[in-house]
Length: 279
Ligand code: DGL
Image (cartoon, rainbow, N blue to C red):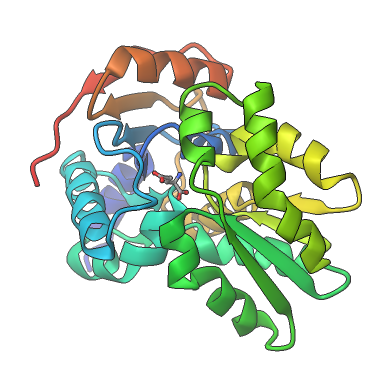
């Protein structure tokens, strides 16, 4: 490649945004870590609020929805897409990598890595949506690190609506958590993966129910570091200077989505734009 052309491509990469998506507000827990680790990057976040939850949908449907969102992000000239949704990462990542021309990163491998580093008794429990648990994506990712690790799985389908409805601190949420988490406590795992990006919203309550001896891990920090090193390796990092911008899209009720985003990101955000998906 001619050096001038190469420099022009690198410079435009610096300005391009990183696309991030989830079925709803859950992926904002990932975006929060990304904004912290990469303050100069521009981000475009898409919450597929018209189709939340993804967790109980078939693999074919999740793949269809994730592809439609990712293709929209691709039209926004993003330089990288982060699938900030465990269900979509577990079920659609290979299809997305195949059909897109931009690089794609998911949340399963970073979450598994965080858990493998944290466990001391070699027993890990995974909490996730029905789709994530049935895919066994975490079990496979953990066993890749170490075949001898014991992995216990628990689907927690009601956690997503509780997080979406702002029920994180209500007694009803704790009652439900006690039901889901009793077998997790029985499993003897010393490390629990919050294998759905909505679950960190309920982290305080989950920690209270499980007790202090159990480490709760999620993908956010490890993924943010992986994105940082990916950008560096591929010379795609934004030039340091002003704080990067943030543009939000939602496929339904952008006002409600914007309010949740402001609260979760703890920063003032511009109102989300409504973007209906073409399936
Ligand atoms: N937050 C997503 C996940 O990490 C999706 C939850 C859902 O829509 O069911 O799995």
